[in-house]
Length: 77
Image (cartoon, rainbow, N blue to C red):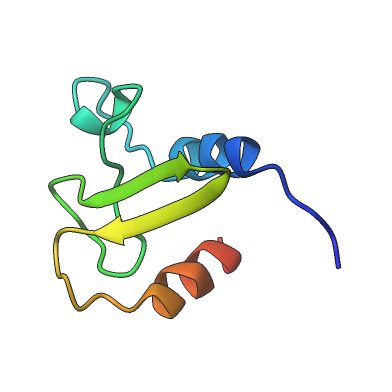
């Protein structure tokens, strides 16, 4: 099983989920990005962060947004 660097994954996910509007909060270094589960997401709602060496994802658009759906959407990108 491959081992992934969580900080590299965070960087790649953030880059992939930024919109083309450079004024959007998704371009801030620690801002939320656009959740791939429920596009179009006009407000960045997906928190992507690393804590204690673990990649954490949480959607604030819909607290019931299933983690598995987020991961699957990222894999399909």
